[in-house]
Image (tube, rainbow, N blue to C red):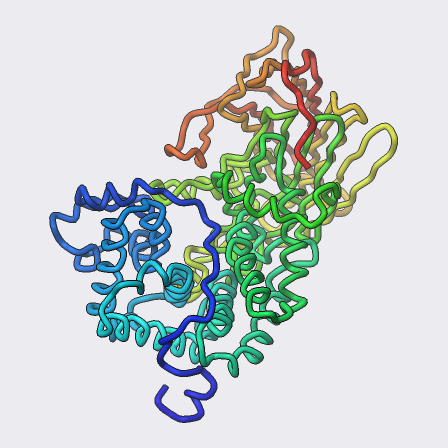
Length: 548
């Protein structure tokens, strides 16, 4: 990084003047200052007793805690405390980091952490730079410039996916905000736009297929777009269009209770963050799309919304947090959730992540107690993907149909064909008034006939939201479901035995909590058909239209 050519490409190694300071749209927690003042720091799902030491002097309790600490996103919380003592603490902690890590961060911090730190320092520059000594000012701005230069020279080393896009976002933001970086802007803008095209699909979904990642991306892209306005520059077309597409995607993945459907690594919905980005919707009255290039399908009639996963896992390097939930679905009625996948746990309960990724934790069919996608064990892939990625063998096909009487989706996947032989085909249809959902799950040969050497057990899971109650009906093969707003639904099934079993909601903010599931159990000789129906008995006491 010392050659003249590299300095020209990466920009100057100092950042002694900021032209503009972008807003920070993320939710704040002013109580963090009181926590720090009391000698504790909770980040990334772990709480540490500081015992009078700097947090940067301690051995991190987890990688997540270290990432959040060194990303400096908590500066927004100290700003929100709105006191001179909190501001002084923010400046002291930045100075401590600069003193301790000025020469080591390149070896210890992932690119995404450096990028987040650059964004945080620039966004809170007035907090960390105002009123400090000239020597501290120079040390902080020099460090910022060196970090920008390092990322500009090494951004290709960031893992594919969100981390790389975040890295390029930080670089474009820096080139807009820091004096002397204008000459790098055009090049970084081009690289950033290319990466947006690679990662943001035509429908606004992210290539990882995680419905929550667009929220995180938007919380950075929206301030970036405002920086272009502040500088009197036209924002790249790729940026403007990606923002609009991602908002439309989030509307399509949002269920009646305001949460995002829990597929492929999606856990608890950060309601404030989602509301913030949705508020920027350029077309608030436009209905959400019903079929997405991200391979999700949305069916909506009356107050009933169903979202179904009709796609395979993402590419291996992006599948470290993907789930084996092919053909699973979630259902809401008004503001009540009926069926919800178990979701992804928070950082404090990472030990349960593997279980949450299994097919059995989703509202779909599981054959022979095996997931439809298999984990790939390879050290290099695990390092790049952040965890063992999953891969599903064979194709996934789907088709959507609609008529005045209702709409439906038919989909099939070959995830079990190579190991066992049968293909799983699922067909779901919602009536025009939203009061009835009919489904059929079929196991059969991809072509011709299939006869297995011995019957294989299967289980079709219908995980109920924890605030939804269920009991067995009087007639065999039936169950009665009561929603949190007083609605009642009758579930019927034929072709398998209906039982009620324990389930988990992994995504709850307080940690995994118990819930229920309806399970249809049977055994297949190679070809089986299970039909099921969900019908409204009593309407919800409060049944507002689904949020669209």
